[in-house]
Length: 143
Figure 1 (cartoon, one colour):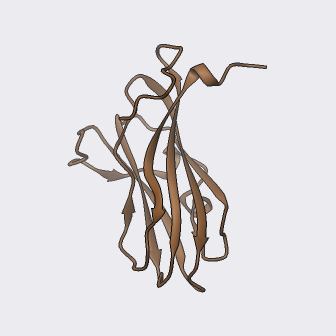
Figure 2 (cartoon, rainbow, N blue to C red):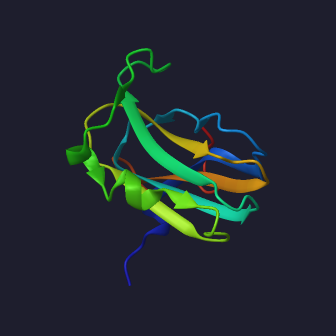
């Protein structure tokens, strides 16, 4: 079996909590990919109480650490699709993933609810892989 443990780093994109009602976009922290050759976002849902809410996913990247140069990530730079990473009220306690294969240093993920009037428990983990130096720190160093 190969060693994944020493060749990944993880950071919280969105800490787990109740994002509540409303349709405001929920953004992850800006993820710095320096020193890594791969990035995967893992989206975990808990209770999604609304009976008709949808949650669309989009990814942005740029070379400025504050993403003042942000742009939507081209579909050709995604591993998987934003549509497959999106979810609905009916997908409680599920995990979705979407990867980044672009060349920008900074990346973030957005989740935009529509018609959300209830509880929305979710979190996002950013999984960085293929480090330029390993082993990676344990416990992980938060960005």
